[in-house]
Image: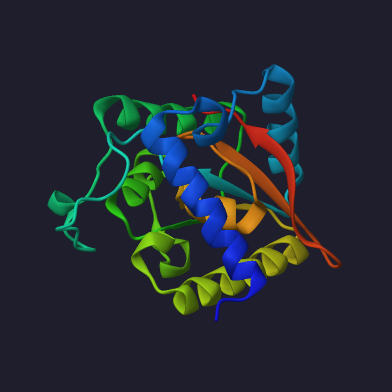
Length: 204
């Protein structure tokens, strides 16, 4: 029987799925914060000891098709031209602020790898960042635990920042928040409560 935590994650994912299909902007997408949020996020990245978790850039559709195969981009949802431009703009924004990530890790899904490579010129595939829709509840729980552990390590190291490119459902499971395509979350770690959302970096 699923644990209460697993049931909560499933319920949240179902709500997000309904929101994505129905186009409810208040649930499926996060409202773009103002310039202050942008400045706060960039200041935290400059300070270091944080992770910038990004939802992949714009990709048409809601879910991968039934014929989806990991490693075969032709069977997946992929970035639109607008999404590719959005990813490039994100990288340009950080470079203009003098910021370069110490490490770029990405879900192995093509839309995430492409977002990372277009923005930062590199990407290290990491299965823990993959879409939970493709895995069992046990696998998803293991991935979530791996992400939490890696976040704690990255924050404790305190030097520079990592970028993680992933999916809406992963960020929802990790933090309980919703994100827009191309939006970034600056994450910290609390020894008592776990992941902390420190600031949002609005999508370009």
